[in-house]
Structures are given as C-alpha cells and as structure tokens.
Amino acid sequence: MGVLNSTDLIVIGCGISGLSCAVSALQAGANVVVLERATEPEFGGNTRWTDSYWRMKSATEVSDDLEESLVANAGHNIDPNVIDAVSTPYENWPGYVKAHGMPDPELVSTLSSMAPSTVDWLQSFGVKFDALPTYFMTAKAPRIMPAGGGLALIEALRVAALKLGAQIRYETTATRLSRVDKSYELLANGPGGAVVVLWSRAVMIASGGFEGNQEMMTQYIGPTARYLRPVARGGYYNKGEGIRLALALGAAPAGDFSSFHAEPVDPRSKRHEALVMNFPYGILVNRRGRRFTDEAPGPVDIHYDHISRDIKDQPDGIAHVIFDARMDDVPNWKKSIRTDLPPLSASSLEELARACGIADEGLAATVKAYNAACGKGRFSALEVDGLSTQGLSPPKSNWARPIDKAPYFAYPIIPTVCFTYGGVKTNASAQVVDNDGRPIPGLYAAGEAAGLYYQVYTGATSVMRGAVFGKIAGAHAAGLVPK
Image 1: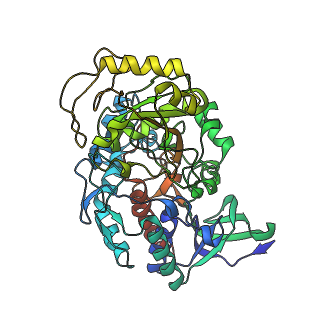
Image 2 (image 1 turned 90 degrees about the vertical axis):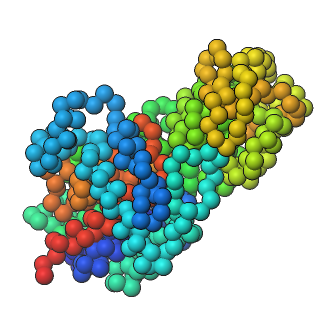
Image 3 (image 1 turned 45 degrees about the vertical axis):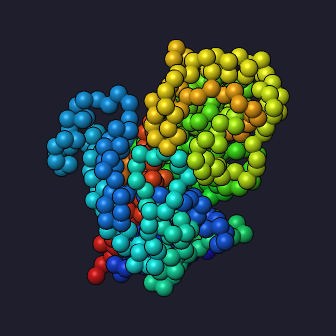
C-alpha cells in the first residue's frame, strides 16, 4: 500500500472541471494532487473530444436566453412551494429546498455572471475563443468556442497546473472516500493494482458521469440502455464512482438520473462524434419503416437532443433518416454530417429499405402517406419555414417536402450518450450539499458529477459550467489552507 503525504486538495478527474479547479486552487496557494483514471495520452475525459461550444454572444456576454433556458428545463411538476421558496434570499430557503435537485436560481445566475470572467481567465493561458463555424444548419442560440476545442483547454490548463506544482497521477482511480475529523482519507487503485492512500483537507469530485458504466446506465436509464454507448472514447472512463463516493457521504442527488444528453451518430463509423444532423430535411423511420417523431419542430440545435433520445425507444434502438435528391437544395447540407461513411443509396424506396434492413412495405407506405400530407408553401432551408404536414401523426412541423426524387438515400442513426444528467447537488460555491441542504465541509463537485440538467439539455453549457464551477471550487477550497 503506497501512502502519499497529505495535501490541501485532491481533485478526482482531469477534464475541464478538475483542471480548472486545480489551477484555481494552485493560484491561490494550495497544494494539489490530481487523480486521472486514463493513461496520460488519453487524459481529459469527455473534454478531450468535444468542440466545447459556449452559449455566449461573445467572450464578454452570455446568450440572452441562457438563464431562461436553464430554468425552463428545471424539471417536471415542480412543487409551487419550492418555486416560491427559491424566489426569496438563499439563506431563507428551507433545508429541503437547498437540497432540491433542480438547477436553482443561485446556480443559474452564478453560471451566467461568472462565464465571461472564466473565459478571460482561460484566455490568460493562451487559449483563444471565437465564434467559429458549427455543424448546425439552423440554430437559435449563439455560440463561441476555443480554437482547438476542449483539447486546447485541458492541454493549456495541464501545462499551467504542472508549472504551479500540481502532482498528476495517471491510471489512478478513486475507490473509497471517508471523512476523519476535518480531513478526508481517500483510497485509490494505482498503476499495476497498487493501493494509494491520500489525506487532504478538501476533495473535488470532477470524475464525470456514469455513461461508461453499463450497470449504472441500466439501473437509472432502464433496459433501453443496452442500445447506448458513449459518443466518444472519453465517456468510457466515466464510470460514476465519484458520484457514488459523494452519495455515500450523504450528498443530496441532483439532476435527472433517468436521462442523458444524446447526440445522433452513424453506428457504422469508428470516428468520435460521427454526427448525422440532416434529419430535419428528411424523415426518421424505425425498423418497421414507420415514423415516430416530429423531425423538425424548430431549430435543430434546440431539438436534436430529445429527438435522439426518442430513437433509443425504437426497435433495436436504431433509426434511419430517409431523404432524396432534393437534399441538394439545402445549401452546404453536408456540414451537418460528420460520419466518414457515405449514405446508403438506391434507385427506389424498396431497394433502399432492403439496404437498410427495414420493412420495405412499411417504408413505402410511410413515404406515401408523408408525401400526401406535405403542404404547399415556400421552402426555406436555413430558417424555420413553417412548411408542415397536414393531418399526419406525428406531424412534421417544418421543411416538409415530398420524398419522391430519385435517387433515395439513408443514414443509420443511433443515439449516443454525451453525458448523463444525474449527479450530486452543489451550491453556488460548488460545495456538495447534503440531504438537509447543508454544505459538506471540504467536499466539492463540478461538471457531469454535479447534477444540473432535466428534460432537454441547454446546449453549449456543459464545458462552460465545468470551467466556471471548477474555478470557483478551487478558489473556495484554497481558503481552507492555513495561512
């Protein structure tokens, strides 16, 4: 058993949340040890693989709808007494309200107000943010992103952390956490199976969600979890231990454990995030050749999340987007496609159905009914056009044009998990809150491990919240260090 000297802060996880916390604490004078399950070349969890969009108009302004969107997706059937309570000053909230899993106004306003200064802080390490092109054909919310994506963020922060004296231990997984007086004892499995023991005044849980743990996925998501996989390799490292360690210490749960942020990808591709986002201009059908959802209720950046999750409930958890030669009327439509494999194609719908492995009679009947329901109006590819079906269930609300111009095409699509929603409750200082609404001394969480989302993901906020609350946690934890 290897015992390390005690430190001021242990950070579990080396993605955007963990490294933001580590650097912030180091800048405030704390000693920091970072534990990372992955090998050094794969460090960074999901952050390594993401484009890292931020829901901001510029480096100094968040999106006008940021707070509204987060509050709108705060959960189902929220008790009006809870809503009344959160409209009062935080110190007056009852304990059960402080422990409530919803993204309360304190968290939302902190994220909104602190995002610009966090961008500025990240840029001090050489990262550049700009309004770079996205893969969305239609989008409601503005977005900026770092040049080089999430990888640029974690590489810059790791360099800063090491210069400031951080220890980063790769291939090391936290397995047990206990409070002893005012300190924490943490056990971890290190390289070669060695047991590592660490002591610290504070611990940051930044180890992601549980999308890489099939047992937890099935427990919380249900039997359709068997159809799901992480959107990129980083997700396989997120096995939920950090969340379980915090829950075992009395942390209140937060976020929707039964749901996740989904992205539609081509299951044939080995490429990470092999997105297929052109379905608003075609139709989605299941194995039986039947439609099952409105493919185009509005801008795709708002709706792709729940449409993707709908696919997991279809036979075999798969769908196909069906389209025809009219797709070429959509300017630059291939920017919505990130798979490296071509679509299936055929000269007839029956041939296309056989190529897809779906019921040819079902597809033919579905397309016939859909074509008959397409209304007349002006097709406008790059804006919500209201060109909808009439008398069809489910409807298609926009961009509804007949599919009758050969050749015909299809991409297979499965939903993949970007991250799970369920985690632990935190306050505006990123402190983990117990089931009575009290901060657990010295325990912090951010990113996927801190539950925030319900219903539909508020796009372009995941890396942003990880950086904001990671930075806050580091500065707060450093305050525990004797001067």
